[in-house]
Length: 467
Image 1 (tube, rainbow, N blue to C red):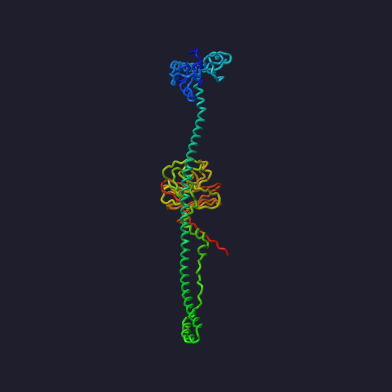
Image 2 (spheres, helix red, strand yellow):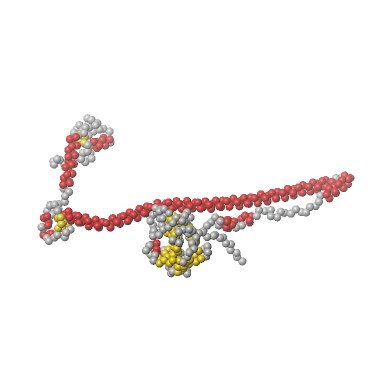
């Protein structure tokens, strides 16, 4: 085998060591697949080397050459494996030691050389183990960082899917709301066109009766006039003979009062078109609702479920939601969609018979720093007791025995006060006074399945009068 080279055992077509070689009658050998591909492009089957025509179209396998090639490959791989052990470049000896001063593998001859005089050495396996541990420790931060990136990537994938669900759900609700509006407008259109057509039909009948009466009077007068005019054109004797009857006929036809035009006969266009859009808008308020605070589902704790119109919340089964900076995790809470830093704002919350709830406001800074809960101002109802909380360490028990069904929250940013009261009895509950300097979001907290709901306020359409 040592006298053979890789070139001696290479196929003339692919220039690689023979694979499943076959031999032609001209004694030239080729890989079986190489020969088939070669002949597949030729019209005449001939040897790719000497161009002679083979005796057989299916040449026999060259088993001796096949065995020789396999043995050559095996020996080559063994030589490559044996030569893979790195030797010292200076002394061609195996590297069995590690110089701690130079931080490099060395041989036993290097240890005794001047280059490594008074140096410290470790067996190569011990040094490798120590350095593996060191490298492993250095790798841990990268591995942890990779986990963080993979976790964020997974959350981003979940967020992308949740965005699609949100978009489809919101689109469906928008279509439902507009469908109601379209139906209302269509019904209003039909009702107003029906009223117009009824007025048209009524006044048309009245006008028809008037015209029929006038036609009868005109016909009667026309007959009397025509007969009298014929008498006037008659001969004198005939005229005088019929004169008396003609006079009686004329005198018997009474002179009626002149007919008058019918008042109000035309369509009352002003009634149908006057302030049409305003009147429809005014009527539409019966189907339009307004809630001063709308809940933001992107802030809701995973244990909370919001109503379809985003005005109610209850605690229920934990939902699988993507993590996002706005979401609250420290309490089962949800925020209003709009924050306030100026003006006055009020909203009523129906708590009903819920045994545990809290309402108030949360400062915007708490969202980015959950340890700074001093930005949370609320009243809490728990175990039949009311407390006023302005931070985790300060709870004021309120001397109240009544169980409220509704709570009114009133935020006056200008006077820097946050007040709570009972809207049913107009009873004051508690007031916070604080130097509010940032946006405050309405805050709602519940730990039970009993829903909390933000109440709607009436919608009015005003008509401004100018003198």
